[in-house]
Length: 331
Image (cartoon, rainbow, N blue to C red; front, side, top):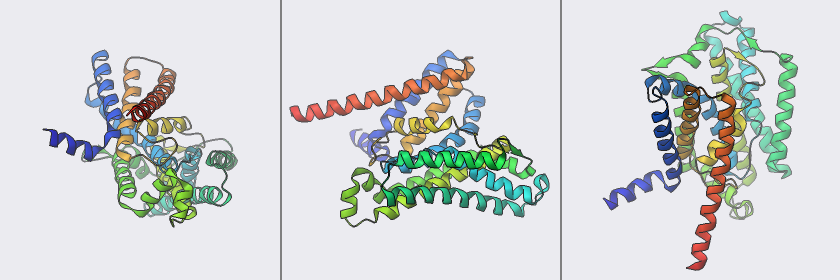
């Protein structure tokens, strides 16, 4: 039995404990408080709503692991969606052929990659703080998007676009399948690639990583470029879900992505963290939101509780860290 427990912990890691406890607690609390919480309707709703927040969280994850942050993720996602919308509009709008789908996706991915690369270059070569650089990029993208759309929405897409946001394959929502593929890709990237090792080294100690022979500038640029690509995927999903694109779509997700990352055990100073605990944390947050909705709570209350949860998580982790240091000194 002890050997089984050791193997289980080795497979999932000690950082999985907090998210799993939170998941069980949410299931128990809302399962008892709301009669229809533990139902297929609830889990189906979560399955369709989770990918939007989840993809943006993955876009935030890599910069956080390097000790940085990307405050422009939602606007990069929407600008990428605008690029895809422009392709469909120029190919006939609702009558755009399926051949336009590839060009629209390439336009979105190229836009996301470009915004991420510009951000990464600015951070890597000027050594400016990521908060300042990404805040500046956020303001730029928002202003550019408002200029291009004149503050309005763009809608009128071919019917096959709706299948991306609302379709199902073998009973599983298409957005969820795309999200799961992205989670698996990020997991492999962080655990099996030199880039994953390098970005964790940078998050632990930038100077040590540089003197160990790593091309830290190249890694930082790649990290933010990949973050931009993930933003583009999120932008395509949001466009398909809402059947429209607007600069402000999903703006409230920004801080929730940071909360999900920290709840999933990501070190706020970089250098440590994994994808799977963050995935569980995202499920917890989405179930919490769905449970409050079923109980008739105002959506603003859910946002407030997410903020309280962030404070509690950070306080608990700080206390646990200080307790560990105290025990080591006492020993």
